[in-house]
Image (cartoon, rainbow, N blue to C red; front, side):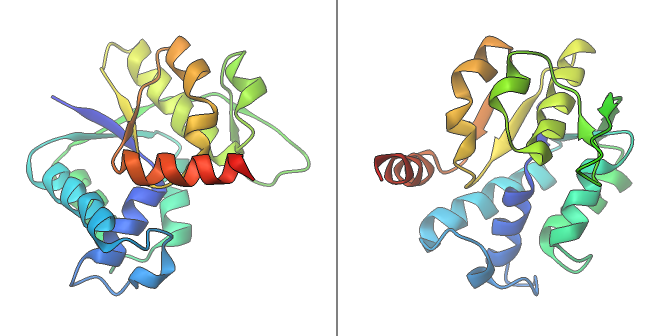
Length: 180
């Protein structure tokens, strides 16, 4: 059975492409409709075929989803379906206090802490690592955030796998950013 920490961008892109979702496709960065459709197809398959979602038991990942989407958007409907079917594994995370940041920041091990500067993504990494510690195979699923490539080597060394749903599109965006 597959378990995934689903990055918020996956829910956003899929919501923008779903015909019944009020979220507009012009509100996500994947301008190639064919690539955005791949993200929607993955999320629909994930919803229908029993894949398990992994989240923290403090609901911080879900809180991030809710900052970007509404209950009428397809991405949050999938989360609700997973919850109703008991297809979510909740894991405990440690949090550090950062007086300069009002949000909770998940504790991740060195050297990841040194390379992962996106504090919101740290909770995704920590949840994946925690699931793995509990003997649950788990990956992080990403659609369009290119910073995951910056951390790829260190993530792999720590045992964190990131499934890139639109690899060619994302890699091209990452390369264009780094070629500047």
